[in-house]
Length: 394
Ligand code: ADP
Image 1 (tube, rainbow, N blue to C red):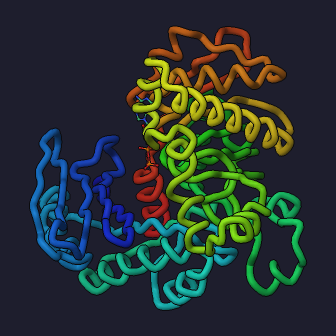
Image 2: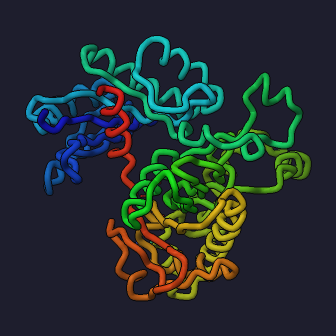
């Protein structure tokens, strides 16, 4: 059988990210993003081989964007597209693996929407349009939460009245599962360890950030919870705060839930702390020039990250290595150095030269010889979604 092609779609409320994944090739034949959908500035950007292109599509919606991009995808696939893999943020307790899309799975995803009111409806919109446009192509949903369904109860339950869990699904779910799974498998390969007999701590550091403890290929604990706000300091998200902050702000400042939600999700994290930017590159440059806010934001980011990793080590029977991934994890020797420096009891020591070299998608170990493993592993969520889709087509 010749190598198969899967289109991977990640649909947001006003954007569609896409990539054509061929099972035999590492790079994508075509990838891109349609953004600002529904507005006068709606635009489709795509990269074909090394060349970048753009086309304005004023007021184009999700359907128009898919209709515009599909002929390009079909051409890049030489007319041989075998299926579509959709990223879905929340699968609740219902989905422990990827699922073939049909009416029953669509209903189950809809039923999970109250847990992810911003994300799941947008994901469903993309699925709906794609299924209407391509009724004969097999389509699969791959969930950010599914990998974490192996968390033991003592890791996923909040210390809240039981009825909130039983009747309303209030528990920790975790996110970034596709990335945590992909990089832990790749790390095992790189270190010639068996996935089924290896234990990892993973730090996925992008705009959203989370840690994960992975034992024998299964997630055992993770830093995100009911929503992707819990845990680490992120680009614009606060991560953990005192849960009484809500009532404190309501009582003292008269803020309503909308305001508090917006502040915690959009105005906090690196942006809030630095007063400058949510972008780590900008912050690193500003820190070099002595910017106090940027310096503090980076210090809090690394300390809180190290603290989360140390906490998650409780879930490991042994320690085979710490993995850095995501835009920051894959590209910032500084953040890796500062984080490792806080984990004194782990005995981690970095090889300075290897740490500096592991950037821009290069994966490999960065620990000094004879010290516990620290690795940089480039994530590839699109590829993992395509592999999961293919596994269901087999
Ligand atoms: P997303 O979660 O949206 O997929 P990414 O994984 O692309 O995000 O990560 C984005 C983050 O990675 C940004 O904070 C960006 O500044 C950071 N980043 C990218 N390149 C570098 C770099 N060379 N040094 C430091 N941070 C970087």
